[in-house]
Image (cartoon, rainbow, N blue to C red):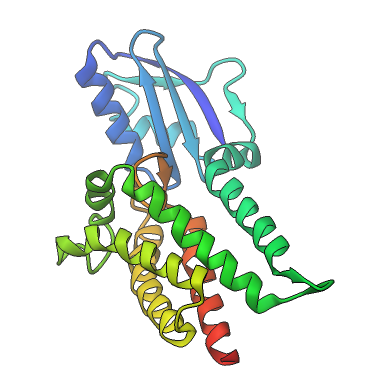
Length: 239
């Protein structure tokens, strides 16, 4: 859900930055936009955070910055806000699912193995494409939470190439056993950092679509990784 509040006391850009960083430290706060000119703070929450808790984060009732409700403060309902935030990922998944279904429909029958193969090819090719649009920005974002990229910066750059290679491998049906094992291992490693970040409520950008979209890390990111893990494991059992 997204709420807009009246916020007084900000006089400069430094004030805006201080207020924003203070509010982002609160649990369940996903994003914050503040403006000293309009004296407003627009806050996106995973769960509702009370006004008192927001004020305490700004220093208490006698602090320089004072936050209060305003008319029509709820700009979006929770479900709409969530859909708007993750619309790029959801649309991409919908497109891949539909195209994969069409490609796997042969002689009037649906082939689930082909559907998963085409879906995973589309997943890795599309996601690597967005990463390559700004590879350096992706690598910097990815290294903030991935357990391997934190220790080996080169892995943050290599990951995009690995995704591209996996996408091409699924698209050409290259050595399915090896391809699925690599996918399983890579996604398991990736999911560890994602799960730790989400459970630790870290307010960081998800790098799944590179630096093109400002997507917050959330349970949706975990679902993406787990989906690839389940699919690759399932395909291995059928080989």
